[in-house]
Length: 449
Image 1: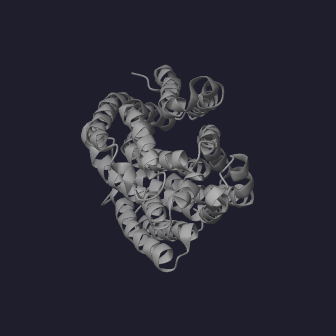
Image 2: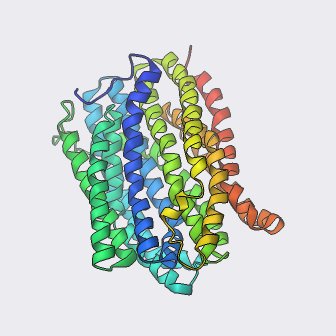
């Protein structure tokens, strides 16, 4: 059991932090993929290339995050069976996750490759500076590797289901270092541009996937023999019923984001570049919330599986305190750097760079001050999912997406470009309200005192 954490015993805050801190560092490493791509492309190729990468953000995030939360949903079953010490079901849950993840990620891959150009055209991606063609190249390459991304996220989620958050950290440290080296080789030396940046990301995640797979096979209760690989239709149905709504949630959320991206794309390359710089930094701002969310999921799922309902309730209260504290600490560090951080991606010697940085600084300020709301979304959304209800997460995603669409279309005509800076915070607030109320109603039914 070395490297795994049993969260059914001990102080919730200590267990969550012990689990979450390696995940935070892991997610920081994972964000390096996109940050290094953006920095090398933006400073090494140019503002137009950075804008091209930025124009793909919401489209790729739609698939990447859908796959990530779906695999996390599958791994929730591993957590529950680990909490109840059911070894047979643990192995069945792992193999069923593999089957479902392969099938769904292949569908995403084919749809993404075929739809890359039409989607970018529909989003009115700028054609000046060869932005559209570069965006198509980058997005198509990233979609070619979506199966690898899915299986990295699955193996990392399975390890975290056992309470092991350190192995994904080690995998990501190796992969992040490799990504930087390959970025420099492919983009700077070989001059492969945005294709080289995308290829470096895919190859690096492949290494992370292999590393995590080896570790899973060494866990004592994991015995993936012939019996484990037999198809279990009932379990597959339960896992699909739970995991697919989580994926749909992020599809819907990101469809709203694509409407926002379409509005942003009409503002010119300087605005797109500034907006893109903040979106790259957003991953760093969000990663602590994502990491705490992973801790909440594992903690709640293990205790729910063990029937420790009072510990699940207590964990939510602890989680809220940790979330607000983490968001406030991050804001205190990032706010003074709001004009400096965007310059990591923008060469100030280029035309339009000063305007892009100013736009980025204004947008980043609003994002930083709104972080506590975003982090509370993760507390209640992940706990709701862990105790077996993913439907309200889907409804929350619909509300979040609808908010983005309304603000980027109807309200945009009234308020102008300034509305773009407030779209995300308002969407987060709605998302939180749509999981906060259902959680406290649902816990009365599923978590008896």
